[in-house]
Image (cartoon, rainbow, N blue to C red; front, side, top):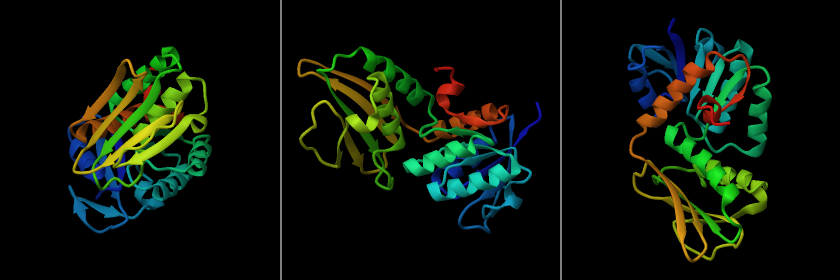
Length: 257
């Protein structure tokens, strides 16, 4: 198999650095170019550039862990060059997500708020569980990350909330409850309430709790290393390289749909 040329955007960020390290262990991939808002530094013999047509023109797949605004800029270049894109960036607005859907009509895009195998299987289980659980169970989602994570609820927490809402055959906005950031409070009944913690160096802990006062059922995932997100993104790059256009996620890649 010919190696797939990869561009990593946000190369100086946490995930960018891990992706650069992990890609050397993947025999199917070759690190081709790097971009970041702060260009100039050289890593593994590759000089970091700003996002541009030149930076992406000989790449096969762009892996993007940056910021929503930067992701949309990257997609615009990718559309012009007919490149495939893996997006691990989170915090998109509804309008920005609609723009991504429009780009996917022209190019292949793999987008997931969490590239972990475990989280995506958890999402699948939560969806099935929500179809069966009676309506008298209150639902809470715990969302724990390090103190530097800006967006909340996290993309992973929203993935799990969407799984609940689909299981209940409801729109998420109609059953989205209160968000408690580093504190407790009164729950909204018959809503999905979010318990968010942004402290310390936690990589990622998420759970979905179903409570009817007689029992609590907890479905949980804990990440101990960001390497699992990087490896998930690299596997996604191999998978999306065979697609022409469309918007895909981990559920598609794992055959869980």
